[in-house]
Amino acid sequence: MPKENRIDAIMKLTMSEALQSGKFKDFISELIPVVCNSLNAFRVSFWLHRTERDEFESIQCFDMESREACNGEALDKSTFPQFCQTLKSEPFLHIESTNESKELEEFVVDHLLKNKLRSWASIQIWNEHNLFGILAVEWKANKDFTEVDQMIMVTAASLISRCYDALLRLKEDFLHRSELSSLKGEEKEKEKLARKLSDHAFYTSHSIRHPLSTILALIDLIKLNWENREAYEELLQQLKIETMNLDDAIRVMTAKIELD
Image (cartoon, rainbow, N blue to C red; front, side):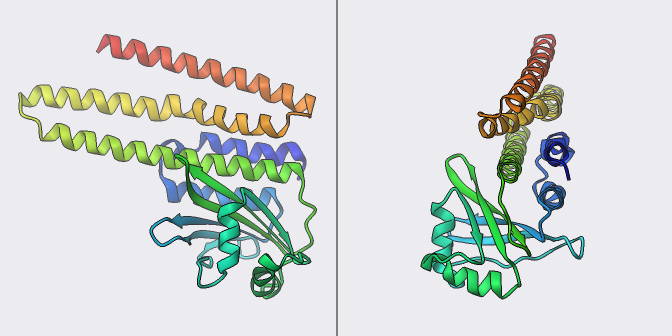
């Protein structure tokens, strides 16, 4: 797949309804097949970091051969203790089956070679300064890992973090509604206020989050294309367009609030 198509496939996900509405598992189901295809990988998986147990719980895995989502292996201190420490300490990790590092030898032998894999890569996903999860990619052949591959994984990680943000906002909105229902006062006033809150939340989710998510993803891409002038200029132009779209959306929202 050409470089442009590989990147475009990921960027199109910024328009995903699941991303904007915080439907986290639905978005993961959309994302990992695209990442798998874009990287020509054998398998892509997402692991959620469970802080209380200090382990990575497998949420979903996509297998290119079966073309189906499946359950992946959970990684914790009981399976690959040294490797799990490496996952938490390294922002980006690429391992080939020929890797001679003693720290990773256990993982190479027990996972890569056992499953007839030749190469493996992961990227950390952060949210509010906390390690939130790991996106992992596996190949059956030796992999010459490129800047475009890294760009795709960085963008995917950014989108996962944005979707989690949207999920948190939905939960906050639900709590606000619960608090509203417990207030005393005229039922009509309460109903009117609830309807206004619902309208504003819907507009924010659909009209503002879309350009904002795109801007955040574009920033990640610009960082990776800093020395590629042609790509840099193109991404900068797209960033300007999305910033103008966000400005328009904010103006409309401000007008709606003033009218209400």
